[in-house]
Length: 207
Image (cartoon, rainbow, N blue to C red; front, side, top):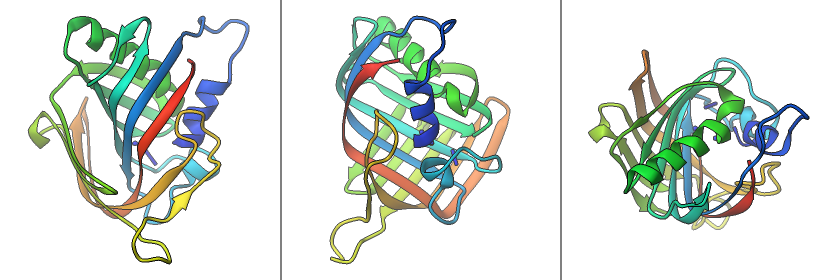
């Protein structure tokens, strides 16, 4: 894929070196949603990042902070081709919040590939329990429609637990009904493919 790979994000959050920039504390609560071109469960999240996947994602933050800035109500959206490029968008209430969201996005998603740019945008997300509708700039830049993939009880979505990612250690299985991305010189369509979601993200750590 990819909207976060969860394994790839883990590699970035958890790994470090002597010469890496100093990490900064963060915490956030909210909803994370992604969709990608993989027809089955995306191996970027289960095993390792791979070329050939394209995806989009959104992080809707209900509460949290980074670099001493309150992130409550902020949103981050991304389009990406893992091992290639990442283009990020932020929607914040103030210039300071947008700057902090941009700084977080650059660090959190760098493991997917070069973060080419972060831009201010209008990001909208609605729905619950795996049935979501997302748009960036009214759908001109990005859109995503998803539904849950139900488990054996036929009521709740299949879940994946113990994912090696400190930010999203578990998520539910969804399906991308349709989606698209058009930004930063990149363009692709999504239909009847993989999706993951977690509408109860509670995470804190250093990045």
